[in-house]
Image 1 (tube, rainbow over the protein chains, first blue to last red):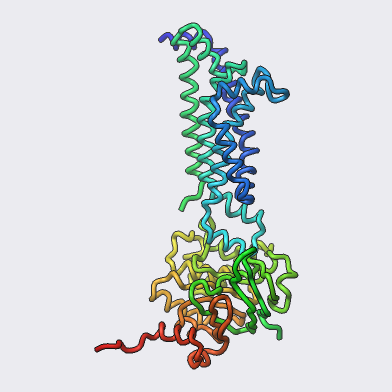
Image 2: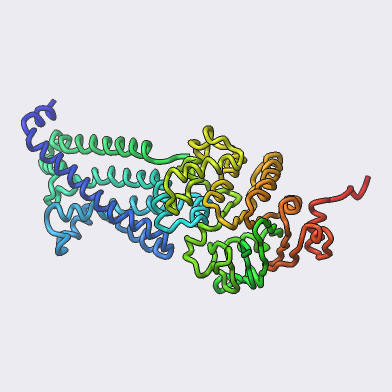
Length: 211
Length: 250
């Protein structure tokens, strides 16, 4: 009840914060895709890079998000207070599932299919775009789904460095020991994560080829 | 007339390792089928991969329809060689029609010509186009899949066909059926073929000549009759494995 009254009184601000939150998640996931998919493909072509790259991405994954935001603040260009720093951190977290699943999606393609494709005279690019990416799409999308859902949660912490989003209510609520305020930020964030999971799951089922 | 395939002194050594194929020479004329017979690991499959350059030869020369394989861009070379493997490797996300039309599509044929060719190829391997063209590989039986694999290899009308144990994974009845049909195809197509198998009976049935491989070398090369008469120990071993003879004790 308190929550509904809160939303009714602050509807303008709520919509603004939800918008910021969606934007943080969308832009960081998009950047992670642009970097992560080619990187995942590269790992299938240069096996020697696999262990160092996935290892490094794994290490980044283990850094607590609040600490990562902190580390980024003093850095020039990508750091500072505000949305840029938050986006950089979110990209770093989204990279691992996207790179790993792109790699695994392609590596999981039947070796006989790959041999037939090469043996019939496909170029490497044709093999990638006509065979490996379509067949690996399901696994890749699963990675995007994990990245997005995690990102929705992590983006709440972005408020700590002034990037806005639903974390603003959560931090304000924690500071003033106000459960309604915490819930005002946490509930829409949770719903957003569920919605992202559902939508991307649907995309996975619709777009991915399965045997 | 130029031979479909000429191989001279072909060799392959694993970089920094063992020699898998050594000093291989043979010729396959138009309308001829050379069966490469040998145990697992004798270098049969490696030989096929050296011909279509899935592996790069470390010695010797391969000529396909008169042209040096090493001089052609690798994709062009491969599109001129039909390739059928035991696991078939049909693209699971392509229909039968797209699978068969693959090389013509890569070669940029107009769609109408591809569609015609696909129907022709389906008829050739005994599949009804109306029933099968729109199906996906997982909707086919093993024998039907292998027929599609053969149709796909033939679609761009290559002068040379490489077959790596194409019927190896089929049940005995389907296998005999496909062997029989394949015999008919060999006569009609007028292509050079290299057919790898470890099944002597299949080899004698389908080959115009037999090449016996052992330890990466060709230890026998001749007609089926010559193979039956050969005293080479490996030839004797293969013959006796195919025909165990009467049991030793009552």
